[in-house]
Length: 325
Image (cartoon, rainbow, N blue to C red; front, top):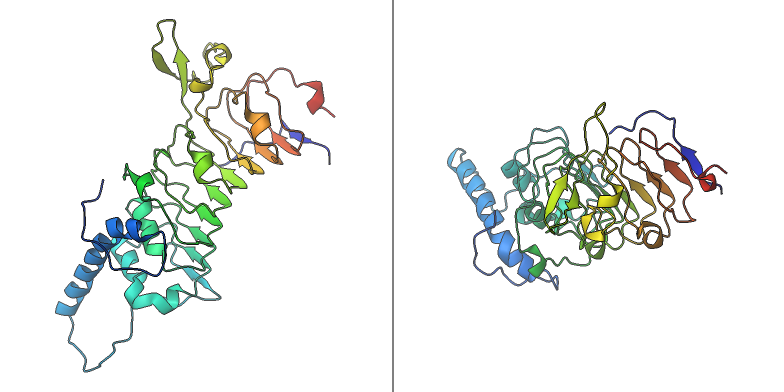
């Protein structure tokens, strides 16, 4: 099909953990080291909550108490969104010992729009019993990435997770991102990230859809002395000096890598000045590209596979003939 060019459409919307005792041996190979570091601390927190609850209730003469904190999935979907859940409350609802039967049935989990404040990797430790889960929406919480040495133990079981939405969280940096490599679609919009690091494409090599709208990418200007300074895009209405000549060096671009299999890429409102020179040769399967509401003045080469391009609200004065057909 021919390339659809959209230029006049409307604007796009848009602590390191303490060492802990070794965990018990688990049937999942490859995840023991991750659980050794993270899971005991989470279990202690959950246990403390249960103990506090026991002190406030009268024990019933039952030998096997039924789990009352677990939510039963409806049509294999567990929807906990807009529940004002705190971190501790979520840990109880996803406790492996109490809720194993329910967790194993979940295909889709929605915990969006809550008050969950924890490290992203610690959150995923709660998800490990959910081996059949395909989709997780954890958007609009207070998730961060604080574990700095995650790569040394970032191993997941044979996970089937395909979709992850962590948009509208204060992620801040993707340098130590640790997620299952099975993910094919991720939403990182409005996460306060300033770059896509070099190791991103290696970690999430199966990505086909990627959305990073509403982040402020920071370019690096190289001076004659070899010093580097962040380049800020001037506000609208001021004198604009093109920064193209400053960022031709590959080290100056905030877009340091992209997964080769990506087909849909949303990068609107990201303060993008230009795309890296390797763009067209790397994303050769790209079908949809949204670059609207950026500061691009010169269009780069695009892969022949591209079918839809949105360059609305940029500084482009001339559209190449190849895009007009």
